[in-house]
Image (cartoon, rainbow, N blue to C red; front, side, top):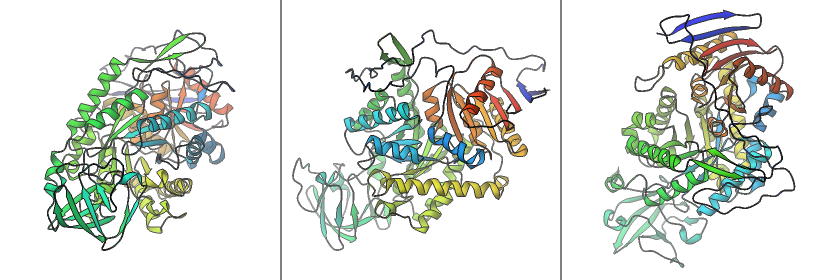
Length: 593
Protein backbone atom coordinates (compact mmCIF):
# COMPACT_ATOMS: atom_id res chain seq x y z
CA UNK A 1 0.00 0.00 0.00
CA UNK A 2 1.35 3.47 -0.91
CA UNK A 3 0.97 5.95 1.96
CA UNK A 4 1.85 9.61 1.29
CA UNK A 5 3.00 11.93 4.05
CA UNK A 6 3.40 15.69 4.00
CA UNK A 7 5.72 18.11 5.77
CA UNK A 8 6.27 21.84 5.30
CA UNK A 9 9.08 24.27 6.02
CA UNK A 10 9.50 27.97 5.34
CA UNK A 11 11.09 27.29 1.99
CA UNK A 12 9.69 24.03 0.70
CA UNK A 13 6.82 21.62 0.68
CA UNK A 14 7.86 17.96 0.83
CA UNK A 15 5.88 14.89 -0.16
CA UNK A 16 7.29 11.48 0.68
CA UNK A 17 6.01 8.01 -0.18
CA UNK A 18 6.33 4.78 1.79
CA UNK A 19 5.33 1.27 0.73
CA UNK A 20 5.17 -0.05 4.30
CA UNK A 21 1.89 -0.42 6.21
CA UNK A 22 2.98 2.08 8.84
CA UNK A 23 3.16 5.77 7.81
CA UNK A 24 5.78 6.48 10.47
CA UNK A 25 8.30 4.01 9.12
CA UNK A 26 10.89 5.37 6.67
CA UNK A 27 13.02 3.62 4.12
CA UNK A 28 16.67 3.06 5.08
CA UNK A 29 19.29 5.17 3.40
CA UNK A 30 21.46 3.40 0.85
CA UNK A 31 24.86 5.09 0.46
CA UNK A 32 25.99 5.80 -3.08
CA UNK A 33 29.28 4.18 -4.13
CA UNK A 34 32.25 6.49 -3.67
CA UNK A 35 35.46 6.48 -5.57
CA UNK A 36 38.69 5.90 -3.75
CA UNK A 37 40.69 7.43 -6.60
CA UNK A 38 41.14 11.15 -7.18
CA UNK A 39 42.74 12.57 -10.29
CA UNK A 40 44.29 15.97 -10.82
CA UNK A 41 42.55 18.21 -13.31
CA UNK A 42 45.17 18.35 -16.04
CA UNK A 43 46.60 14.86 -16.15
CA UNK A 44 47.18 13.88 -19.81
CA UNK A 45 44.93 10.99 -20.81
CA UNK A 46 45.73 8.22 -23.22
CA UNK A 47 43.12 6.50 -25.35
CA UNK A 48 41.00 3.74 -23.70
CA UNK A 49 42.21 0.20 -24.21
CA UNK A 50 39.60 -2.46 -24.96
CA UNK A 51 39.82 -6.19 -25.49
CA UNK A 52 39.39 -5.72 -29.25
CA UNK A 53 41.54 -2.68 -29.86
CA UNK A 54 44.75 -2.57 -27.90
CA UNK A 55 46.82 0.12 -29.55
CA UNK A 56 47.45 3.25 -27.46
CA UNK A 57 47.85 6.74 -28.92
CA UNK A 58 48.63 10.02 -27.19
CA UNK A 59 46.17 12.86 -27.92
CA UNK A 60 47.11 16.41 -28.80
CA UNK A 61 48.59 17.96 -25.65
CA UNK A 62 48.50 21.56 -26.76
CA UNK A 63 45.67 22.07 -24.28
CA UNK A 64 44.72 20.07 -21.17
CA UNK A 65 42.36 17.19 -22.05
CA UNK A 66 39.06 16.60 -20.35
CA UNK A 67 38.58 13.05 -19.19
CA UNK A 68 36.07 10.96 -17.22
CA UNK A 69 36.62 10.43 -13.51
CA UNK A 70 35.84 7.37 -11.48
CA UNK A 71 32.43 7.44 -9.82
CA UNK A 72 31.13 10.48 -11.70
CA UNK A 73 31.94 14.12 -12.35
CA UNK A 74 33.99 16.52 -10.24
CA UNK A 75 32.33 17.21 -6.89
CA UNK A 76 32.52 20.97 -7.45
CA UNK A 77 31.28 20.97 -11.06
CA UNK A 78 28.16 20.32 -13.07
CA UNK A 79 28.30 19.16 -16.70
CA UNK A 80 25.58 20.62 -18.91
CA UNK A 81 25.02 20.46 -22.65
CA UNK A 82 26.32 23.61 -24.32
CA UNK A 83 23.20 24.17 -26.45
CA UNK A 84 20.85 23.56 -23.51
CA UNK A 85 22.76 26.05 -21.42
CA UNK A 86 22.54 28.70 -24.15
CA UNK A 87 18.79 28.11 -24.62
CA UNK A 88 18.12 28.46 -20.90
CA UNK A 89 20.11 31.69 -20.68
CA UNK A 90 18.53 33.26 -23.75
CA UNK A 91 14.92 32.06 -23.65
CA UNK A 92 14.17 30.78 -20.14
CA UNK A 93 12.69 27.48 -19.01
CA UNK A 94 9.59 27.23 -21.15
CA UNK A 95 11.19 28.05 -24.49
CA UNK A 96 13.55 25.10 -24.56
CA UNK A 97 13.07 22.39 -27.20
CA UNK A 98 11.58 19.13 -25.90
CA UNK A 99 11.68 16.96 -29.07
CA UNK A 100 15.11 15.42 -29.61
CA UNK A 101 16.94 15.12 -32.95
CA UNK A 102 18.92 12.18 -34.34
CA UNK A 103 21.30 12.88 -37.24
CA UNK A 104 22.69 10.17 -39.51
CA UNK A 105 26.40 10.73 -40.09
CA UNK A 106 27.75 10.27 -43.60
CA UNK A 107 30.36 11.67 -45.98
CA UNK A 108 28.95 15.20 -45.69
CA UNK A 109 29.08 15.34 -41.89
CA UNK A 110 31.82 12.96 -40.66
CA UNK A 111 34.52 15.57 -39.99
CA UNK A 112 35.06 17.07 -36.55
CA UNK A 113 34.02 20.58 -37.64
CA UNK A 114 30.89 19.26 -39.34
CA UNK A 115 29.96 17.20 -36.27
CA UNK A 116 30.44 20.25 -34.08
CA UNK A 117 28.17 22.29 -36.37
CA UNK A 118 25.45 19.63 -36.01
CA UNK A 119 25.86 19.55 -32.22
CA UNK A 120 25.61 23.35 -32.04
CA UNK A 121 22.52 23.14 -34.24
CA UNK A 122 20.77 20.77 -31.84
CA UNK A 123 21.84 17.19 -32.64
CA UNK A 124 21.24 14.98 -29.60
CA UNK A 125 22.19 11.60 -31.07
CA UNK A 126 24.66 10.77 -33.85
CA UNK A 127 23.60 7.71 -35.88
CA UNK A 128 26.03 5.51 -37.79
CA UNK A 129 24.55 3.17 -40.39
CA UNK A 130 26.42 -0.11 -40.76
CA UNK A 131 24.96 -0.55 -44.26
CA UNK A 132 27.60 1.91 -45.44
CA UNK A 133 31.28 2.46 -44.76
CA UNK A 134 33.92 0.36 -43.04
CA UNK A 135 34.25 -0.31 -39.32
CA UNK A 136 37.39 1.81 -39.27
CA UNK A 137 35.45 4.73 -40.76
CA UNK A 138 32.73 4.31 -38.13
CA UNK A 139 35.36 4.07 -35.39
CA UNK A 140 36.73 7.44 -36.41
CA UNK A 141 33.26 8.98 -36.28
CA UNK A 142 32.67 7.57 -32.78
CA UNK A 143 36.03 8.90 -31.58
CA UNK A 144 35.25 12.36 -32.98
CA UNK A 145 31.87 12.44 -31.24
CA UNK A 146 33.49 11.46 -27.93
CA UNK A 147 36.17 14.10 -28.42
CA UNK A 148 33.46 16.66 -29.24
CA UNK A 149 31.67 15.87 -25.98
CA UNK A 150 34.85 16.09 -23.93
CA UNK A 151 36.33 19.23 -25.45
CA UNK A 152 33.24 21.24 -26.34
CA UNK A 153 30.81 20.38 -23.54
CA UNK A 154 28.16 18.35 -25.38
CA UNK A 155 26.43 15.09 -24.44
CA UNK A 156 25.82 13.64 -27.91
CA UNK A 157 25.01 9.91 -27.80
CA UNK A 158 26.01 7.41 -30.50
CA UNK A 159 23.51 5.05 -32.11
CA UNK A 160 24.58 2.15 -34.35
CA UNK A 161 22.07 0.89 -36.93
CA UNK A 162 22.46 -2.73 -38.04
CA UNK A 163 22.15 -3.67 -41.70
CA UNK A 164 19.66 -6.49 -41.20
CA UNK A 165 18.97 -9.50 -43.42
CA UNK A 166 16.32 -8.16 -45.78
CA UNK A 167 16.87 -8.21 -49.53
CA UNK A 168 18.78 -5.16 -50.74
CA UNK A 169 20.98 -3.91 -53.54
CA UNK A 170 24.76 -3.84 -53.49
CA UNK A 171 27.16 -0.89 -53.61
CA UNK A 172 26.61 0.07 -57.27
CA UNK A 173 30.25 -0.64 -58.01
CA UNK A 174 31.40 2.18 -55.75
CA UNK A 175 29.22 4.87 -57.34
CA UNK A 176 27.40 7.27 -55.00
CA UNK A 177 24.16 6.87 -56.98
CA UNK A 178 22.75 5.93 -60.38
CA UNK A 179 19.80 7.32 -62.33
CA UNK A 180 17.25 4.90 -63.83
CA UNK A 181 15.27 6.40 -66.69
CA UNK A 182 11.84 5.38 -67.95
CA UNK A 183 12.02 2.42 -70.34
CA UNK A 184 15.65 1.53 -69.61
CA UNK A 185 16.56 -2.12 -69.15
CA UNK A 186 18.57 -3.03 -66.04
CA UNK A 187 19.95 -6.36 -64.83
CA UNK A 188 19.69 -7.53 -61.21
CA UNK A 189 22.11 -10.36 -60.49
CA UNK A 190 23.43 -12.46 -57.62
CA UNK A 191 26.80 -12.86 -59.36
CA UNK A 192 29.70 -11.12 -57.58
CA UNK A 193 31.66 -8.40 -59.39
CA UNK A 194 34.94 -7.59 -57.70
CA UNK A 195 35.96 -4.59 -59.79
CA UNK A 196 34.08 -3.69 -62.96
CA UNK A 197 30.29 -3.76 -63.06
CA UNK A 198 28.66 -4.07 -66.46
CA UNK A 199 26.61 -1.01 -67.37
CA UNK A 200 23.13 -0.88 -65.78
CA UNK A 201 23.81 -3.92 -63.60
CA UNK A 202 22.93 -4.13 -59.92
CA UNK A 203 24.04 -6.83 -57.50
CA UNK A 204 21.57 -8.34 -55.01
CA UNK A 205 22.56 -9.77 -51.61
CA UNK A 206 20.06 -12.67 -51.59
CA UNK A 207 21.28 -15.83 -53.39
CA UNK A 208 17.75 -17.12 -54.03
CA UNK A 209 16.61 -13.90 -55.68
CA UNK A 210 16.63 -15.18 -59.29
CA UNK A 211 14.73 -18.31 -58.28
CA UNK A 212 12.00 -16.50 -56.33
CA UNK A 213 11.03 -13.75 -58.78
CA UNK A 214 8.85 -14.44 -61.79
CA UNK A 215 8.43 -12.69 -65.12
CA UNK A 216 5.79 -9.98 -64.65
CA UNK A 217 6.67 -9.28 -60.99
CA UNK A 218 7.14 -5.65 -59.96
CA UNK A 219 10.45 -4.78 -58.29
CA UNK A 220 10.31 -1.78 -55.93
CA UNK A 221 13.44 0.07 -54.81
CA UNK A 222 13.20 1.88 -51.43
CA UNK A 223 9.47 1.33 -51.25
CA UNK A 224 8.71 2.63 -54.72
CA UNK A 225 11.23 5.43 -55.26
CA UNK A 226 12.11 3.48 -58.43
CA UNK A 227 9.98 0.73 -59.96
CA UNK A 228 10.89 -2.06 -62.40
CA UNK A 229 8.98 -4.90 -64.09
CA UNK A 230 10.71 -8.28 -64.52
CA UNK A 231 10.90 -9.09 -68.25
CA UNK A 232 13.28 -12.07 -68.42
CA UNK A 233 15.26 -14.53 -66.25
CA UNK A 234 18.58 -15.93 -67.52
CA UNK A 235 20.38 -18.07 -64.91
CA UNK A 236 21.46 -15.83 -62.03
CA UNK A 237 20.44 -12.68 -63.91
CA UNK A 238 17.03 -10.98 -63.85
CA UNK A 239 16.33 -8.49 -66.62
CA UNK A 240 13.94 -5.65 -65.74
CA UNK A 241 12.42 -2.63 -67.44
CA UNK A 242 12.16 0.66 -65.52
CA UNK A 243 8.56 1.89 -65.32
CA UNK A 244 8.95 4.61 -62.66
CA UNK A 245 12.29 6.45 -63.04
CA UNK A 246 14.31 7.70 -60.10
CA UNK A 247 17.60 7.74 -58.24
CA UNK A 248 19.18 4.43 -57.17
CA UNK A 249 21.24 4.54 -53.98
CA UNK A 250 23.71 1.94 -52.68
CA UNK A 251 22.24 -0.85 -50.52
CA UNK A 252 18.67 0.30 -51.11
CA UNK A 253 15.92 -2.03 -49.93
CA UNK A 254 14.26 -4.29 -52.53
CA UNK A 255 10.76 -5.78 -52.45
CA UNK A 256 8.90 -7.59 -55.18
CA UNK A 257 5.16 -7.70 -55.73
CA UNK A 258 3.00 -10.22 -57.58
CA UNK A 259 -0.62 -9.57 -58.55
CA UNK A 260 -0.73 -6.55 -56.25
CA UNK A 261 0.56 -8.40 -53.18
CA UNK A 262 3.96 -8.34 -51.49
CA UNK A 263 5.98 -11.54 -51.99
CA UNK A 264 7.49 -12.11 -48.55
CA UNK A 265 7.83 -15.85 -47.95
CA UNK A 266 11.60 -15.79 -48.40
CA UNK A 267 12.01 -12.55 -46.43
CA UNK A 268 10.22 -14.17 -43.49
CA UNK A 269 12.78 -17.00 -43.50
CA UNK A 270 15.80 -14.70 -43.34
CA UNK A 271 17.29 -14.14 -39.86
CA UNK A 272 16.86 -10.72 -38.25
CA UNK A 273 20.55 -10.54 -37.36
CA UNK A 274 23.03 -11.75 -39.97
CA UNK A 275 26.62 -12.84 -39.34
CA UNK A 276 27.73 -9.35 -40.38
CA UNK A 277 25.31 -7.82 -37.88
CA UNK A 278 26.82 -9.85 -35.03
CA UNK A 279 30.32 -8.70 -35.97
CA UNK A 280 29.06 -5.12 -36.08
CA UNK A 281 27.42 -5.56 -32.68
CA UNK A 282 30.72 -6.80 -31.21
CA UNK A 283 32.36 -3.74 -32.72
CA UNK A 284 29.76 -1.45 -31.16
CA UNK A 285 30.13 -3.03 -27.73
CA UNK A 286 33.91 -2.66 -27.89
CA UNK A 287 33.58 1.01 -28.88
CA UNK A 288 31.14 1.77 -26.05
CA UNK A 289 28.23 3.06 -28.13
CA UNK A 290 24.99 4.07 -26.42
CA UNK A 291 22.28 2.54 -28.65
CA UNK A 292 21.95 -0.34 -31.10
CA UNK A 293 19.03 -0.04 -33.53
CA UNK A 294 18.02 -3.48 -34.83
CA UNK A 295 16.70 -3.54 -38.39
CA UNK A 296 13.68 -5.58 -39.53
CA UNK A 297 12.73 -6.94 -36.10
CA UNK A 298 10.28 -9.81 -36.47
CA UNK A 299 9.67 -10.79 -32.84
CA UNK A 300 10.44 -9.85 -29.25
CA UNK A 301 12.72 -12.89 -28.91
CA UNK A 302 15.34 -11.25 -31.11
CA UNK A 303 15.44 -8.20 -28.82
CA UNK A 304 15.63 -10.35 -25.68
CA UNK A 305 18.41 -12.46 -27.15
CA UNK A 306 20.47 -9.41 -28.12
CA UNK A 307 20.02 -7.74 -24.72
CA UNK A 308 21.13 -10.96 -23.03
CA UNK A 309 24.18 -11.12 -25.30
CA UNK A 310 25.10 -7.48 -24.56
CA UNK A 311 24.81 -8.13 -20.81
CA UNK A 312 27.07 -11.18 -21.12
CA UNK A 313 29.67 -9.28 -23.12
CA UNK A 314 29.59 -6.40 -20.65
CA UNK A 315 30.15 -8.86 -17.79
CA UNK A 316 33.09 -10.49 -19.55
CA UNK A 317 34.59 -7.13 -20.50
CA UNK A 318 33.95 -5.61 -17.10
CA UNK A 319 35.88 -2.45 -17.66
CA UNK A 320 37.93 -0.24 -19.91
CA UNK A 321 41.31 0.83 -18.64
CA UNK A 322 42.46 4.43 -18.82
CA UNK A 323 46.19 5.02 -18.41
CA UNK A 324 47.45 8.33 -17.07
CA UNK A 325 50.86 9.59 -16.05
CA UNK A 326 50.00 9.23 -12.37
CA UNK A 327 47.84 6.14 -12.10
CA UNK A 328 45.60 3.54 -13.76
CA UNK A 329 41.91 3.48 -12.98
CA UNK A 330 38.90 1.59 -14.28
CA UNK A 331 35.52 2.68 -15.53
CA UNK A 332 32.66 0.17 -15.36
CA UNK A 333 31.04 -0.77 -18.67
CA UNK A 334 27.46 0.39 -19.13
CA UNK A 335 24.61 -1.46 -20.77
CA UNK A 336 23.72 -0.49 -24.31
CA UNK A 337 20.09 0.34 -25.04
CA UNK A 338 18.44 -1.69 -27.81
CA UNK A 339 16.09 0.12 -30.22
CA UNK A 340 13.64 -1.95 -32.28
CA UNK A 341 13.14 -0.66 -35.82
CA UNK A 342 9.54 -1.16 -36.89
CA UNK A 343 9.74 -1.52 -40.67
CA UNK A 344 8.03 -4.75 -41.73
CA UNK A 345 4.71 -6.55 -41.62
CA UNK A 346 6.21 -9.06 -39.18
CA UNK A 347 6.93 -6.23 -36.71
CA UNK A 348 3.31 -5.09 -36.76
CA UNK A 349 2.05 -8.58 -35.92
CA UNK A 350 3.93 -8.54 -32.59
CA UNK A 351 4.14 -4.80 -31.99
CA UNK A 352 3.30 -4.62 -28.27
CA UNK A 353 5.61 -7.52 -27.37
CA UNK A 354 8.49 -6.00 -29.36
CA UNK A 355 8.13 -2.52 -27.83
CA UNK A 356 7.77 -3.97 -24.33
CA UNK A 357 10.96 -6.03 -24.72
CA UNK A 358 13.04 -3.22 -26.25
CA UNK A 359 14.52 -0.04 -24.79
CA UNK A 360 12.88 2.07 -27.49
CA UNK A 361 11.40 1.96 -30.99
CA UNK A 362 12.01 3.59 -34.34
CA UNK A 363 9.24 4.13 -36.90
CA UNK A 364 11.23 3.41 -40.10
CA UNK A 365 8.56 4.70 -42.45
CA UNK A 366 10.50 4.21 -45.68
CA UNK A 367 10.85 0.43 -45.50
CA UNK A 368 7.53 0.09 -43.66
CA UNK A 369 5.78 1.88 -46.50
CA UNK A 370 7.21 -0.68 -48.90
CA UNK A 371 5.39 -3.52 -47.12
CA UNK A 372 2.05 -1.99 -46.15
CA UNK A 373 -0.30 0.32 -48.07
CA UNK A 374 0.94 3.92 -47.95
CA UNK A 375 -2.31 5.19 -46.47
CA UNK A 376 -1.76 2.99 -43.40
CA UNK A 377 1.63 4.47 -42.49
CA UNK A 378 0.30 7.55 -40.59
CA UNK A 379 -2.01 5.49 -38.36
CA UNK A 380 0.75 2.94 -37.67
CA UNK A 381 3.11 5.78 -36.73
CA UNK A 382 0.56 7.22 -34.29
CA UNK A 383 -0.02 3.81 -32.72
CA UNK A 384 3.71 3.18 -32.20
CA UNK A 385 4.16 6.59 -30.55
CA UNK A 386 1.25 5.86 -28.21
CA UNK A 387 2.59 2.40 -27.34
CA UNK A 388 5.99 3.93 -26.62
CA UNK A 389 4.46 6.22 -24.01
CA UNK A 390 2.36 3.38 -22.63
CA UNK A 391 5.41 1.18 -22.07
CA UNK A 392 7.71 4.10 -21.14
CA UNK A 393 9.97 3.61 -24.18
CA UNK A 394 11.30 6.46 -26.36
CA UNK A 395 10.07 6.49 -29.97
CA UNK A 396 11.97 7.93 -32.95
CA UNK A 397 10.08 8.96 -36.09
CA UNK A 398 12.39 8.43 -39.07
CA UNK A 399 12.64 8.34 -42.87
CA UNK A 400 11.92 11.04 -45.45
CA UNK A 401 11.07 13.81 -43.00
CA UNK A 402 12.81 16.42 -45.17
CA UNK A 403 13.74 14.31 -48.19
CA UNK A 404 13.70 17.25 -50.62
CA UNK A 405 16.45 18.98 -48.62
CA UNK A 406 18.94 16.41 -49.86
CA UNK A 407 19.00 18.59 -53.00
CA UNK A 408 17.22 21.84 -52.10
CA UNK A 409 17.88 24.46 -49.37
CA UNK A 410 14.25 24.63 -48.16
CA UNK A 411 11.70 21.87 -47.50
CA UNK A 412 8.30 21.46 -49.11
CA UNK A 413 5.30 22.69 -47.12
CA UNK A 414 4.03 19.10 -46.98
CA UNK A 415 7.28 18.01 -45.30
CA UNK A 416 6.91 20.75 -42.69
CA UNK A 417 3.36 19.56 -42.02
CA UNK A 418 4.65 15.99 -41.66
CA UNK A 419 7.26 17.07 -39.11
CA UNK A 420 4.62 19.11 -37.27
CA UNK A 421 2.38 16.06 -37.01
CA UNK A 422 5.17 13.96 -35.48
CA UNK A 423 5.97 16.71 -32.96
CA UNK A 424 2.25 17.11 -32.18
CA UNK A 425 2.01 13.37 -31.51
CA UNK A 426 4.82 14.00 -28.98
CA UNK A 427 7.27 11.49 -30.36
CA UNK A 428 10.50 11.56 -28.39
CA UNK A 429 12.76 12.22 -31.37
CA UNK A 430 12.91 12.97 -35.07
CA UNK A 431 15.61 11.54 -37.33
CA UNK A 432 17.43 12.87 -40.37
CA UNK A 433 18.75 10.19 -42.73
CA UNK A 434 20.03 11.14 -46.19
CA UNK A 435 19.39 14.82 -45.36
CA UNK A 436 22.35 14.87 -42.96
CA UNK A 437 24.40 11.93 -44.28
CA UNK A 438 24.82 12.97 -47.91
CA UNK A 439 22.53 15.96 -48.46
CA UNK A 440 23.67 19.34 -49.73
CA UNK A 441 22.23 21.23 -46.73
CA UNK A 442 22.57 19.16 -43.51
CA UNK A 443 22.74 22.16 -41.17
CA UNK A 444 19.71 23.81 -42.77
CA UNK A 445 17.73 20.58 -42.51
CA UNK A 446 18.61 20.37 -38.82
CA UNK A 447 17.60 24.01 -38.33
CA UNK A 448 14.19 23.27 -39.89
CA UNK A 449 13.55 20.37 -37.48
CA UNK A 450 14.60 22.51 -34.55
CA UNK A 451 12.49 25.56 -35.45
CA UNK A 452 9.39 23.54 -36.34
CA UNK A 453 9.69 21.54 -33.11
CA UNK A 454 9.95 24.70 -31.00
CA UNK A 455 6.97 26.32 -32.68
CA UNK A 456 4.65 23.31 -32.49
CA UNK A 457 5.62 22.58 -28.88
CA UNK A 458 4.84 26.17 -27.89
CA UNK A 459 1.52 26.03 -29.73
CA UNK A 460 0.69 22.74 -28.02
CA UNK A 461 1.31 24.25 -24.57
CA UNK A 462 -0.58 27.47 -25.36
CA UNK A 463 -3.60 25.57 -26.64
CA UNK A 464 -3.60 23.30 -23.58
CA UNK A 465 -3.51 20.17 -25.71
CA UNK A 466 -2.23 18.22 -22.76
CA UNK A 467 -5.84 18.06 -21.58
CA UNK A 468 -6.61 15.84 -24.56
CA UNK A 469 -4.02 13.29 -23.45
CA UNK A 470 -5.57 10.46 -21.50
CA UNK A 471 -3.74 9.47 -18.30
CA UNK A 472 -1.57 6.46 -18.98
CA UNK A 473 -1.33 3.40 -16.78
CA UNK A 474 1.58 1.02 -16.95
CA UNK A 475 0.64 -2.45 -18.26
CA UNK A 476 0.65 -5.18 -15.62
CA UNK A 477 3.63 -6.77 -17.40
CA UNK A 478 5.70 -3.64 -16.71
CA UNK A 479 6.82 -2.74 -13.20
CA UNK A 480 5.30 0.64 -12.35
CA UNK A 481 4.29 0.90 -8.70
CA UNK A 482 5.51 3.66 -6.43
CA UNK A 483 7.93 5.35 -8.90
CA UNK A 484 5.17 5.60 -11.52
CA UNK A 485 2.67 7.13 -9.07
CA UNK A 486 5.28 9.56 -7.78
CA UNK A 487 6.17 10.77 -11.26
CA UNK A 488 2.53 11.05 -12.36
CA UNK A 489 1.81 13.14 -9.26
CA UNK A 490 4.88 15.31 -9.83
CA UNK A 491 3.88 16.04 -13.43
CA UNK A 492 0.33 16.98 -12.39
CA UNK A 493 1.69 19.25 -9.66
CA UNK A 494 4.14 20.90 -12.05
CA UNK A 495 1.40 21.64 -14.60
CA UNK A 496 -1.11 22.88 -12.02
CA UNK A 497 1.38 25.07 -10.16
CA UNK A 498 3.02 26.25 -13.42
CA UNK A 499 6.41 25.20 -12.11
CA UNK A 500 9.50 26.45 -13.92
CA UNK A 501 11.15 23.00 -13.98
CA UNK A 502 11.14 19.49 -12.62
CA UNK A 503 14.36 18.30 -10.97
CA UNK A 504 15.05 14.57 -10.72
CA UNK A 505 18.07 12.93 -9.08
CA UNK A 506 18.55 9.48 -10.58
CA UNK A 507 21.22 6.79 -10.76
CA UNK A 508 19.76 4.69 -13.59
CA UNK A 509 17.57 7.21 -15.42
CA UNK A 510 14.34 5.32 -14.68
CA UNK A 511 12.63 8.11 -12.73
CA UNK A 512 13.66 10.67 -15.34
CA UNK A 513 12.12 8.48 -18.04
CA UNK A 514 8.85 8.20 -16.10
CA UNK A 515 8.68 12.00 -15.80
CA UNK A 516 9.30 12.35 -19.54
CA UNK A 517 6.46 9.88 -20.15
CA UNK A 518 4.03 12.35 -18.51
CA UNK A 519 4.98 15.12 -21.03
CA UNK A 520 4.92 18.01 -18.52
CA UNK A 521 4.69 21.65 -19.63
CA UNK A 522 8.04 22.47 -18.01
CA UNK A 523 11.47 21.03 -18.82
CA UNK A 524 12.95 18.18 -16.77
CA UNK A 525 16.45 18.58 -15.30
CA UNK A 526 17.85 15.07 -14.80
CA UNK A 527 20.93 14.84 -12.56
CA UNK A 528 23.01 11.67 -12.64
CA UNK A 529 26.52 10.56 -11.75
CA UNK A 530 26.97 8.36 -14.83
CA UNK A 531 28.03 9.93 -18.18
CA UNK A 532 26.55 6.96 -20.05
CA UNK A 533 23.15 7.44 -18.38
CA UNK A 534 23.32 11.14 -19.19
CA UNK A 535 23.92 10.43 -22.89
CA UNK A 536 21.11 7.87 -23.11
CA UNK A 537 18.66 10.28 -21.47
CA UNK A 538 19.46 12.75 -24.24
CA UNK A 539 17.15 10.75 -26.54
CA UNK A 540 14.02 11.24 -24.43
CA UNK A 541 11.42 13.96 -24.71
CA UNK A 542 11.85 17.01 -22.49
CA UNK A 543 14.89 15.75 -20.57
CA UNK A 544 17.91 17.97 -19.93
CA UNK A 545 20.53 15.59 -18.54
CA UNK A 546 23.29 16.87 -16.28
CA UNK A 547 26.29 15.12 -14.74
CA UNK A 548 26.58 15.95 -11.04
CA UNK A 549 28.28 14.18 -8.15
CA UNK A 550 25.56 13.05 -5.72
CA UNK A 551 25.96 12.51 -1.98
CA UNK A 552 23.79 10.72 0.58
CA UNK A 553 22.39 14.08 1.71
CA UNK A 554 19.53 15.09 -0.61
CA UNK A 555 19.41 18.65 0.71
CA UNK A 556 23.11 19.04 -0.01
CA UNK A 557 22.61 17.76 -3.57
CA UNK A 558 19.80 20.23 -4.12
CA UNK A 559 21.68 23.21 -2.71
CA UNK A 560 24.77 22.38 -4.73
CA UNK A 561 22.73 22.06 -7.94
CA UNK A 562 21.03 25.41 -7.28
CA UNK A 563 24.37 27.08 -6.57
CA UNK A 564 26.12 25.71 -9.67
CA UNK A 565 23.20 26.39 -12.02
CA UNK A 566 22.74 29.94 -10.69
CA UNK A 567 26.47 30.62 -11.06
CA UNK A 568 26.21 29.72 -14.76
CA UNK A 569 23.05 31.76 -15.29
CA UNK A 570 20.83 28.77 -16.02
CA UNK A 571 18.28 29.41 -13.24
CA UNK A 572 17.28 32.44 -11.20
CA UNK A 573 16.25 32.98 -7.59
CA UNK A 574 12.53 32.65 -6.90
CA UNK A 575 11.81 30.05 -9.57
CA UNK A 576 9.37 27.30 -8.56
CA UNK A 577 10.91 23.83 -8.81
CA UNK A 578 9.37 20.37 -8.26
CA UNK A 579 12.08 18.00 -7.01
CA UNK A 580 11.85 14.20 -7.32
CA UNK A 581 14.33 11.66 -5.96
CA UNK A 582 14.44 7.93 -6.73
CA UNK A 583 16.70 7.41 -3.73
CA UNK A 584 14.44 8.95 -1.07
CA UNK A 585 11.17 8.39 -2.98
CA UNK A 586 10.10 11.93 -2.24
CA UNK A 587 8.63 14.99 -3.94
CA UNK A 588 9.55 18.55 -2.90
CA UNK A 589 8.03 21.85 -3.99
CA UNK A 590 10.64 24.53 -3.49
CA UNK A 591 11.53 28.05 -4.58
CA UNK A 592 15.10 28.61 -5.77
CA UNK A 593 16.82 30.48 -2.92
